[in-house]
Every structure is written in structure tokens, then in C-alpha cells.
Amino acid sequence: MEALVKRQTSALNALEVERDHFKGAFEEADAERQRLELVIRQLLRAQFGRKSERLDPDQFQLTLENLEQDIAAAKTPRQDAADSDGNRRPRRAPARRNLGHLPAHLERDEVVIEPADSICPCCGGAMHQIGVEETERLDAVPLRLRVRVTKRPIYGCRSCAEAVVQAPAPDSAIPGGLPTEALLAQVAVSKYNDGLPLYRQAQILERDGIHLDRATLSDWMGRTAWWLKPLWELLLGSVLSSPKLFCDDTRLPVLAPGKGKTSTGYLWGLARDDSPWQGDLPPAVAYVYTEDRVWDRAREVLADYTGVLQVDGWGGFKRLTGKQDTVLDDAGSVTLAFCWSHGRRQFFEIHQSSQSPIAGEVLRRIAELYRIEDAIRGQPPDARRAVRQDRSRPRVEALKVYLDEQLARVSGKMPVAKAIRYMLSHWDGLCVFLTDGRVELDTNTIERLHRIVATTRKNALFAGSDSGARSWAIFTSLIQSAKMNGLNPFEYLKDVLERVVSGDVKAHQLDCLLPWNWKAERTGRTTAQAA
Image 1 (cartoon, rainbow, N blue to C red):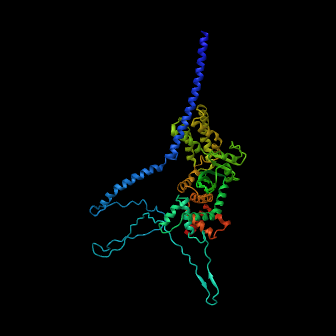
Image 2: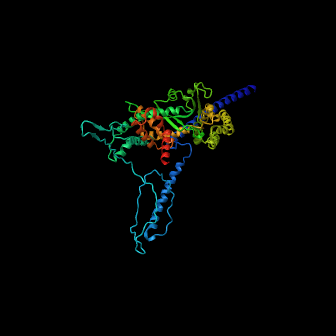
Image 3: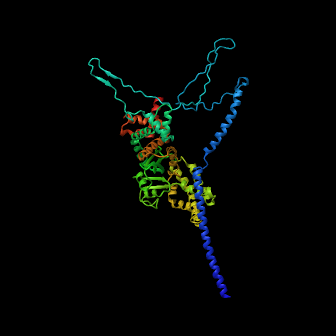
């Protein structure tokens, strides 16, 4: 009997061991299944879904536009019938919703419509004007090309017939070429701001009988970038002298010479925007092209930089501090402030695909931090830091405890565990905003600036060479910086090119052409003219 009990106990233990084995194998397989399902959903979302992590209001606008068009189409026949002579009736005065809202600087093309007869229907006398009803509508004139004819009269002396005087020929960005600086600025802004590839611009010009090859436009852009490079270098130096920067890279396919295929280069964006904390420095962004994305490139781009860098979690940034695995206790003089949006993104994707309660709770807690930030945006650094210490710090500390607890509970191979480990491994950098009122929660500032790069990249497909990619960085830097300072990029580039090419601004005077200085000069000139 005792032997039987021993055999049964031994068999039971064996079954328990086997059960634990299969239980572990099942949990491992289930975690792998969840991971693969998440990968599939992410691929499907990347291929067919919206890229944004939040509901885009513009999507609602698209639906409303269609509805409004249908309503307008239905109203038009009734309005025409009501306006016919047989059905004419008193109408209300037209809405004045647009009067006064069209910019004053736009050219006004006045059309005066006189009555068919100015004889009084009562007494037959001549009528005189007692008033005028004026309405303004926004009109459009397609891109209008014109030919600038430069004439340089030649003067000679009738007395001696030897002296000849003629004004020197003006300098040109393209010596002996067709384009003026205004046309070069138009082509650059159309491509690098509006996302219009050069071959499409060539087709538009052809409609006016101007036959230009795409390669010709490319040559123009390369030469224009050469003129603008010193100003870009000055802009880059100004940005790198800032005490706090946003830094992020975006890919740029580049045609590999002789291979017939593209390689992946990168545009590194360095942005300065101190408006959330009332900083004195003007907003600006500088892009730098590199042929690949290794930490040595980051070191080259950010050479000798000292200050706070707001970045994503890429490991190469950590090496800038002097140690691979530290952020605050670094050997260098760079402090890394990591992006909460990047940490949040993984939980968002998990919650979208599996409705994970852990991911949902993390998203809820992070949303509380963003609501606090919305309330203090635009306040000085000390005030922001005080509010964060009082309201944000307890929430951040509670979130850390929650993440530690959940990581101990879930399988290490589950996607949510990977997301938790990412947050915890960057925790020190994520908490920098608590002690520095200048720091934002995320790097969305530079990521928003990347959108125009993505649009142009999608339409143009690739840069033709490394030099073309460097030109891309120059144009994008100056155009985006001009827009950040509230400037019209075409007017800005046109004036810069005219003054640089003509020699009106020398190399040591380029500082006056930086977007914020250019704006201040124009504003002062306008004020003086008004006075």
C-alpha cells in the first residue's frame, strides 16, 4: 500500500511538472501569438490606416465639404428660379462676412457696372450718382510669366568720338541664364514648401510655351543653393548656440550613382522654439544631411553642442553624453530630455489592436500630464516648473510604480512588456521636464516640421545625389525658418537672392538676412514709411 502511494505521488509530481511545462509553453506561445497579431495589425495600419495617433479634425472637414457641396448644388436651381424676372421679390442685403477680411496688400481689380439707362423713369431728367455698393470677391490669376528686358544704353562723345560709357551688367545667380532671382525663388518654394516636383513645374511652364527640361531646373536649384549656403551655415550656427534644441531625423532616399537604385540618407532637423516658455530667442530650424544614421553622424551634426536636447529614444543620442547607458550622470555637457510621445506611441498601438487594459491605463495617466501642460503653456519657466512639481511629479511617480508592478505580472515576451521596458529604460530622460521649465513633454515641434519634408519626399520620390540632398537641407532650413517667423517664404527668398547676388549684402553682413532680422528690418521700414 505504501509503495502504491509512493508511485501515485511520483506520478502526480510528474504530471505537475508536465503541467507546468505545458503551461509555460502555452504562455510563451500565447505571448508570441499576441506579438505576431500586433505586428500584423501594425502592418495593416501602416499600409491602409491613418498614420496619426489621434482623430484628425481634417477628416471631419472632408465629410462636411461633401455635404456642403451637395447642399449648395441643391440650392442653386431654386435661387436661379427665385432670381428670374417672373419670380423676383425683395431680397435681404447680401451677407458681409468676407468684407474687410481680404488682405489689404492684394491687388484690387475694380469693375464698375453702370445701369443700362441713367435717365429718371419719372421725370426724364438726368440722374447723378448718390452712392455705390461695393463687394469684394477673391479672384485668381494663374502663374504669370513675364520677360524682364534689361537695356544698357551706350553713350559716346560727339567731340572726341573716343569715350564710350555704359552701365555695368547686373550680376545674375545663373550667369548668362534665363531665370531672374524671383523665378528661382518661385521654383524653390514650389518644390521644397509646396511639394511640387521639378518635372511637374516644367509641365506647368510648358503651358505658357516655355520649354524647359527638368535637368535645367535641377541645375538652377543647385546653383541657387550655392548662393544660399553661407546663409544656411550662419543659420545652423545660430541654432546650435541655443541652450535647448529639439533634434530628430527623417529619412531621405538618394539615388546611388551608377547603381540604378536608391540608398537611404537622413535629414537631421535641429529646431529652436522657445515660445511655450516665453523665451527670447526667435524660432528657427536647420537641417543637415548625412549619408547614413549612425551615432558618429549625430556627433558630427551636434559637434560641440552644450545644452538640453529633446530627442527620441534612439541609442545613438545617449552616446553624446559620454556614456551609453546614462542620461543625467553623463560625462559630457549634453542633457537628454526624452519624448513622452514616443513612449506613449507603443501603448497606443497595443491598445488599438488588443484593447489592453494596461495600455489603456498608461494612456489615461499620460493624458493627465498633457492636460497639465496645456494649462501652463506660454508661462515662464519658473511658473511651469512649480506647477509640474506640484501636479505632475506625483502622477509621474505613481506611473513608475504602476509600470514596475505590471512588468512583474505580464510575460516578458508580450508586446506590452516591451513597451513598459522602453519607458523604464528612458525614465531619467523622461523626467527632465519636471526640473526644467523650458523642456516640453515631447518632440512634436520638430516632427511637425518634418511633414513638409515627407510631402516633398513622397512627390519627388528621391534626391538625385548627395549634393542634391544637401541642397534639399539648405532650402528646407531657410523656408521653414521663414515660415516659423511668420514670413512669406517666396518674398523672403527672392529678396535674399537679389541682395546676395547683387553684392548689396556682403559676406560679413549676412546676419541681417536671417529670417528674424530680415523681418525686423522690413517691419521697421514699414513703420517708418507709415510715419
